[in-house]
Image (cartoon, rainbow, N blue to C red):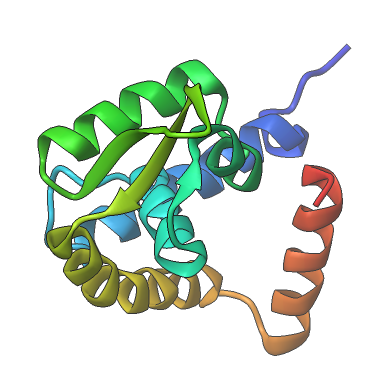
Length: 139
């Protein structure tokens, strides 16, 4: 049985993601900021202070990965983490002033990266691609 990589969804998704990641790294001047870290910053920027569990659910980042991301963002001074006074087991995350500045600067640039990623597609294909990806992602 022939196994043509260019007909395999996982291979094509990985290639598309590699292209998107390259565009992100080129467009965002902060070489230490990943698209997943920006997803966390953008969520907090939009939602305000939230629990790590909530952020993980919204961003679809598993708890162990999110803890590492949060630690790196905290070390960079972009977020603060505190215990919830009503439930000491729960960690609440908010943006620092530097984190808010990063969000205001990088969120529009990241939106432009989406446009660059979709650039090879015509308007109808863009709508279809996003629809199909949302469906595949269960979103």
